[in-house]
Structure formats: C-alpha cells, structure tokens
Image 1 (cartoon, rainbow, N blue to C red):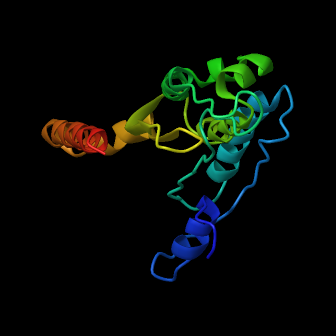
Image 2 (cartoon, rainbow, N blue to C red):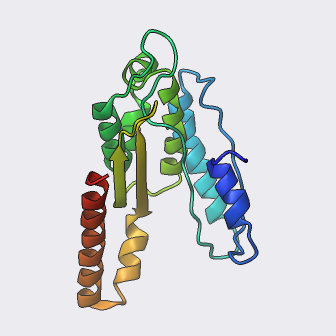
Length: 193
C-alpha cells in the first residue's frame, strides 16, 4: 500500500478529475538543516507568494506546510515531545513568525528534537502569507506515537476583511460566531478521543 503522506493525498485526491486543481509540489529537505534554514524557509515562502501574485489570473491558492512537530526518534532523547514548545510555535506562527526565524539553531534542536527541524516547512507556508493573518482553525494533540500532531489554518487578514465587507455587519458577525462554534465543537470532540 502507498504511504499516506501529503504527497499521496495530493496525487490521489487533488489530481482527480472531479477536483480540477492545479498542483505544484515543492520539496524541502528539513533533515539536512543549515543554521539559516528557518530564515531561508520564511523568505522562500515570500518568494513563492511573489510568484503567485505575479500570475495574470486571479487564483485561489492553498499552501500546505507539512512536517512533524517536536520529536526525536533516536538516541538518548528518543521519544522527546515538547508540547510547550509546539504550542508556542503555533502561537508565533500566527502572531510573530519572524521570532521563529531568530531562534538559535541549537536551541531549536534542543527544544524540538533532531527531527523537529521539519517544522521549518511550516515557515515556508507562513512566509507566503501576509504579515497579519487570522487563525481560522487549530488542533494539537499528542497521540500514542513518536511525534505530536498539529494543524493550523491561517488566512490573510486583509483578504478575509475584504470578503466580509460587502456581506454586511450582520452576516460577518454570524460568520465569526459560526467559526467560533466550529472551533469549540472540534476542541470538545478532540478532547473526548
């Protein structure tokens, strides 16, 4: 059976004729990290955004940043998961991504583990967004495995605001309440698992 990776998901579902998405896969090797990799990843996301914005058509673009959160699978620290670091990473991904690029390399490895360097791939996604974003969805759990699991959906703030203006204040407020209710129900559902 094929591995259930983001690439597998994209190849199997998003390329299906029913969806009709154009897919561009970018691979980034987080395992051979250089000291400046986090900065380069964030700047690479900005370059990706510039390329998308230069396209002639008005596109709807989704960028997935994938990779494990804090974890180490070998050596004396095998089994390391740092929930506090992971949650702070998700907070800063929304509020202050440049802070994440300033974490010294050794501190990042100490806090997130050797394989936690995969989190730099999330910085590519974040670099492709505006400086101000709205957090639409967040999920974090530590399953019975070697890595924590995190999901976050961010949306450019100015584009979100532009969408809600024509709809009027009542519809915008209703949308905000619905999004909050969805987040709350998902948190309740995930706690029960």
